[in-house]
Image (cartoon, rainbow, N blue to C red; front, side, top):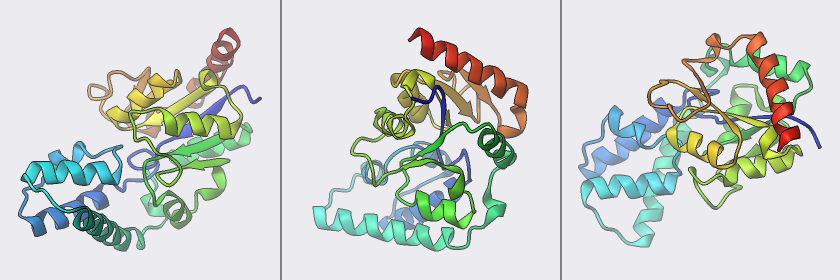
Length: 226
């Protein structure tokens, strides 16, 4: 087995698609007469599309048939897809490629672990698909974060013990999932919000190569002790 593996969430970590999710959910909310703000959208980060719609309907006190529920899921996704069709490499968050290139040079296996069902087309649009040895997305799992399923499957696909894995996440549910999987969690974003992470950084520009080298060594030691 490989000693170490790096797992990345997608939305808010590699690319900023949260703004497009917000616009698509707001369009649906407006249609349903539900007030939906940027702050409300924070509760949708790292959460499956199905659960997001459940939350939205709860906010509006709306009960619907299974058929209508499924129709709104499709409507929201089709709206969202219209936004991501226009994505290109400019959508990659600062210094993400620097980190990915370094890990690739070091031959450290990398996986994507995301709730998004559109992960592969997004990675293709921004020309990052080639970096990942495994993709685990919303099409591959049955349990949403904070359940650790997505990360455990990613570790298995990489051939890495969970104790040797590090996870980059921007959502509380994702940090909880990584910690539950006994992986080393790194929060990307607000350190106060992501207080349960082992380390946190505002973004990848704050992560230097020395930190990554020490991280790999600590993961190897952690794995050996496990």
